[in-house]
Image (cartoon, rainbow, N blue to C red; front, side, top):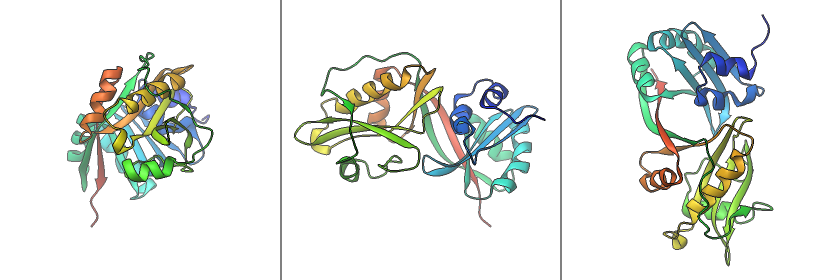
Length: 240
């Protein structure tokens, strides 16, 4: 049987963008499983974690995980549509749902805010310091695996940033959007996000990001820009 291509994986999932993103264009280390009614893609070191995305019918996905989980090991966290993960966690012995969050995406250019003159940075000077002050829980950091470039707004110093990280040919991905605490409330994060979105959308089907439900201000900002939200869930095996 011929090796699977990224197109094959996406087709098997019915075009699920989470599967497409997790597949990372089938870079080295990515593993895929396609069975009747179920697809699973395991990608190590994706957004700082080992991730196992699933798609399909709950019974079929649960059966597939019986094969996949022993193969990938305990560091991989299973993620997918929130309702699917909740259903699968009830079917797989020892699995529990541990997180709920949102996949947010847009397929059309978003309006520029006209604030702050965001642009791609020539380097990463000042980015880590800003993140340490404003967003220490960020998954994207300068020099991190899969983090390609940073955009920002500079006044007397760097005041807002956002990263092109873990993008694939069909999906641009945004991470690390942050504003210095003293510069918040001026719409600078929205301005950076709009700039990066439109830059990454050129030649791609969509631009996406992942947002924690607790970050209500960020979710509101992304919604105003035109992003829609798909609920996701994550589960892992309880340690015995």
